Image 1 (cartoon, one colour):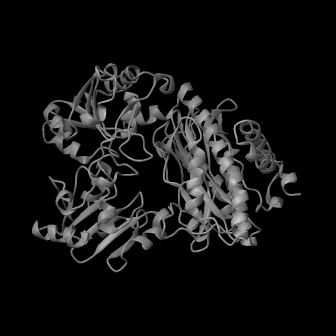
Image 2 (cartoon, rainbow, N blue to C red):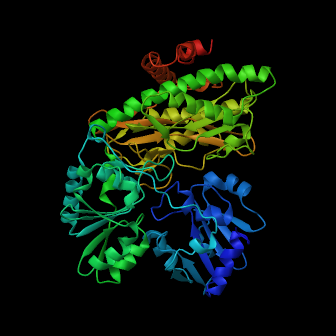
Length: 588
């Protein structure tokens, strides 16, 4: 059992090794957004459970840095007597490293772009050669060992052999001898496999070295590959996962190894350079190639969204009946009850595997926390006085879904209506946009914010993110946000559109559809919605919508109605027809 607090145990270790502090990131060795319990060192030391953050533990103080999504959550989870809260981007870690100090870090958990920023400060960065948490964290969960399965060619759309040769050709063109692939979703795509190490993230935690000839050495726990067909494994060399660094040291001399500065552990740089090799810094080419979906993948997205849309409609029809009935009985429906029922509806859909991320089922003030997850301690009632926000998605055998709807079950005050209308207008402004092919996400971001800016408000998160094909819910490299994103959007990309507004302690609003980028006029692209779910118009100030906006809503709702009516439960069909009626009918 842990006899001292994690913070005290870590400080004792630092003192014993003549270190002034240590950097403890949220990241694992794969920079996973959702880490396995075994790898969640930041939560162990601080109590913070969010998906992005980093801590700096010093002998006399401890600092934790989180982004705008978690500014409320972190204050509810950490001991404010022990931790100082800072913004991950506006007041970053490098501003707080004490001059002259020796600061420890785990080089398996830090990427080169982070290392370059921190090494230019006035402290001395000291790489650790061991995972000290194996000693300090007494009840540490076991490392994950989920079974790996093959992704059928009919769903993947391209053989692994063909993919390897495509990437090998890129290496050859750049004069690189090897590519170290450390992003689990890139490995899953390359090898046409999926994993089960992290809930909702169907990727195997492993590493790959790909040669310029297309040869693959896969560093993976053999227990994970036991059920894979021999035909898949026969073209690969399998090695234990802990042999990646020694192997890089072994092959380094005279070789050029390509590393991604934003995803590969910096320990691979050390292993290469210290053993006579050259690092070629460039983005993993798989990341961009994978983002351009082939016809089979696109067909899978469309099919999975129809199934997910049917589950959503069944759920929303149930909510529309259940919320007022339970309120009238004095026994209001709760966040967790709604979440469980929604999962049950999804589980009725064939090819559903699991959720694509932890459901955000948030009522009233809880919805003001962008990435809130309900628990027995926070489980709030869904009332008629405020919004209920549901952000959820599914992993289906042929695609991944992500959508958000904000609902009202009674008339709300004018401020809530104005904010909801502004979010809807921002959503409509972007989803109806026609834009030049090759535009960047940051060039489009303001379209989703203008209506909110006109009210003097904003939201502190991105407007859209890529979504993997039966892979990660947040897929690089594409993103719509204020921050510059250097990757142009093109037909075949999949991304979300999700503006919102959050008033701390009061309510949160977000509307999100997953969309496909498609060709439009020559030289231009537009968005085609994959998400097929009615949008709640009950609280919209219709007079503030343009004729174009109303027409889009009517056309979209007609598409939803016609596509989903044969798929939904018979008792949900009347609600679907009502919820997708033309704007003028809904408001009459």
